[in-house]
Image 1: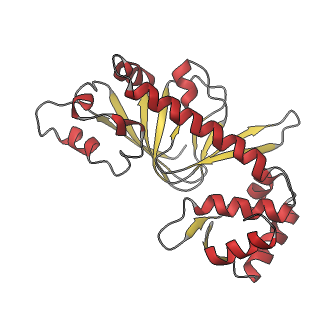
Image 2: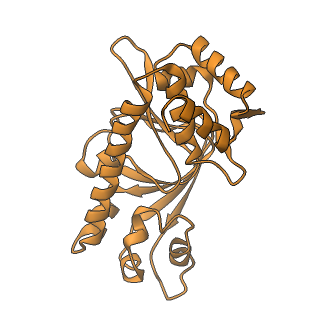
Length: 246
């Protein structure tokens, strides 16, 4: 696995401890789990948090392995995969910037899916013991964990309802709309490989390729080198309206 990991001890030795200040100034802290903690909450952190960088297609964790930590995504996209009884791979959802993943660890359960980096990903690896420590005597953190668990459940249910049923073209348009939620400032999105689109949307590679080519001709997508594309949001809305799916 191609990873770069740096252990970051987060605790205050004095009022200007650099790592505590780094945590307080984190760009995604307001979106992330520790956004509910004030300075006094940060003062209670006495366990190491690991900053992890993964290259595309590197595993974050494997299905069935012991859940010892949760992860906050600081940058990039992570996909969740599982295999059917016949060995077919399915992508069951995607998580992005600010999302908490690996919540099974909080119940001492093994991870339920294979989590794999779609793009280069930056993560904070948060040990389960740290979450347990911070949750003692504080109502905010358990409540935030429940909200994030519900958000992940809602995302999984929406994935099934939007991306697993209906005409193939409509499913692909719904997928692009979801990927647009994680687009860059220039509307650049991560574009899955054709076989990954097939695994996400339960269609053949040939169908995925044909539909992507059609959307490119219609101006919805402009393909870029590598696994990315520029998405025309106006053209996407028009295509969704034509499908009765806006």
